[in-house]
Length: 275
Image (cartoon, rainbow, N blue to C red; front, side, top):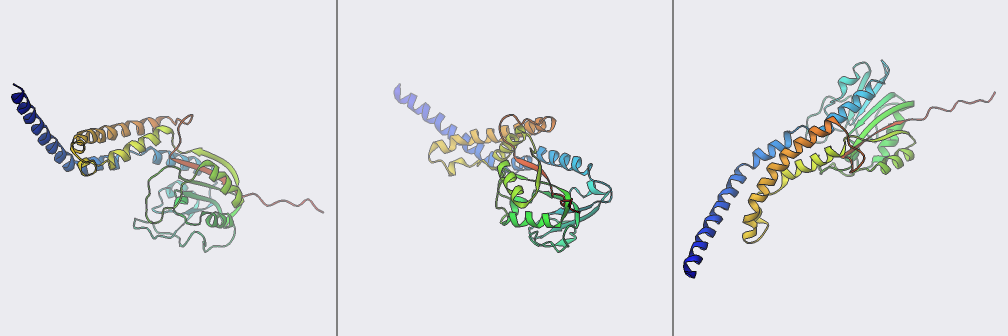
């Protein structure tokens, strides 16, 4: 009786192992589809960054001279169609660039002092090995009273390697802008905490390994396969939901942002009252 029970258990156990192996193969084959879904879901941070630049551009007078520093493919150029737009970038990363006015290191922009009324400086600071030198250079080329909008991540994976060096807290922004000689106008969350959670879920859906048996020894590694596969599918769906939530309302009373967006002004020249 006992031997028959052991034999039946052994058959069920072997069948379970074969089922898990089959499920692992299916999850491996489906890896690309899962990854594709994680990469192409709507990113609320881009929505909020577009909105921030739209609001900023609406305050810029017609005919202002604008510098897009670290412009890349110049996604916000159209917002400044009413201005004289110029772009600067070093163009060394393996990606698509729009034609820059100045191909240069942002530490040394080949223009005269106080050339620009406005600077837009989006998602560049993390890629600068000497960010303070660049901030001082941007202050040099900005006219007194001129304004700058800038943004950079607080929480994000490494990207555009090897040109990825730093992440910035709101306290870093305040200290660095003060040291560079700017008047700080605002430091705000770019997206809300729903957006941060959505990003964490999306990256988990993208990077969690389906072949857990290669990392976790023994049967546990095989039993972990369906758990991870199900989690990746679930996280992918939840990420889209939380991105959707974030686009419709920015929750900032708890948690933390993925990025900060900052506006500053170069102090105006002091007017002498001496006779």
